[in-house]
Picture 1 (cartoon, helix red, strand yellow):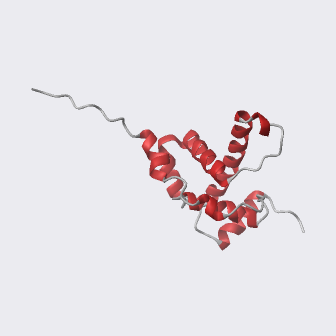
Picture 2: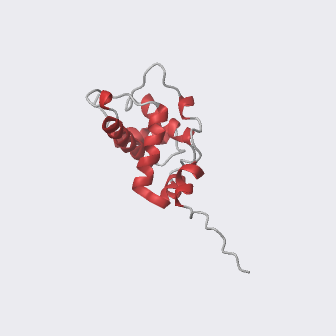
Picture 3: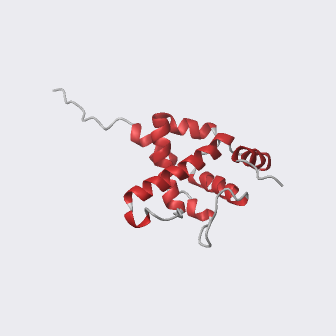
Length: 138
């Protein structure tokens, strides 16, 4: 049997679990690559090795990658893809694990992605205007 490419695997996943748009899977895959590169830049001990990323590390990387890619539109884009919480990222990751696109170690679990941050705090708050001190008129 021929190995399926990423897009074919994602199509199969979306037939079984239609909650998330196919683009969300591509984003998580690219976000993992982004996260690994960033971790290797900031942690010399991990630089030369094959790197396992924890759920927390991936969530932080996905946040940074999303803000970099979509800026103030991040929340809108993720909502459009059906991704509305950290747990949704976990579901996408574990769907990819189930199809052998991603790997896991014995300690990895879906709960690692349970609401590490709120999407409001992560994707909306950075773009809100800072509180402006009220001018006092006498």
